[in-house]
Image (cartoon, rainbow, N blue to C red; front, side):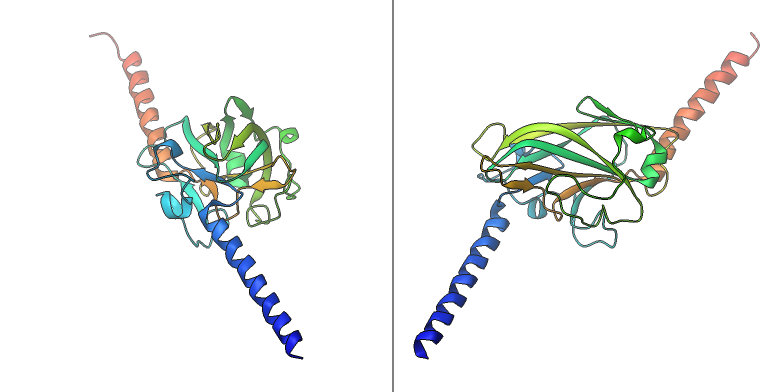
Length: 244
């Protein structure tokens, strides 16, 4: 009886130790891909890379919107400038044949003319480009964005191999250029996930608490559009004025 109790206690301690070790590994940068709103090469402190949840100034915690909760959320800061960059880094191990998964919602599908990701052109009006099934690709499991009622579809962009520090490259710059049809419609969102595999064919991905969402601000973009419209109207009136 005592032997059985000792064995049970030993097993419980072992399970707890494994759980704690796993938690510590994840917190310190376990086998994950992490998004950043700025170049990780500029981050202070030693490697491995810091957890975006603790570091990135654009990280949002709990939010009612599944597209934004526990995610890096990038709205325009005063001005919506395009193109702009986001970064994807490998926190531990390696990520081979990495795929960037670009998801858009219904509002983005109507408001965007094109999205250029590192030179690859995405067109929401071309249904052949977008998987609208709501079933995530690769080893990504269903989560808030894919389960969302406003989910339109996703597109996969290959971004190559990544390695954890001090490997090279451990981070890549992803350049995003967005061309709008006629200003940003309210609620427009573009979401990024990523996944790959290790040399041992194990899946590696960006955790659903560490992905990235772009949410253009309606007022800012419409204001910019109005400014350009006013300039165009002024130029048109000048052309119509009779010579003095």
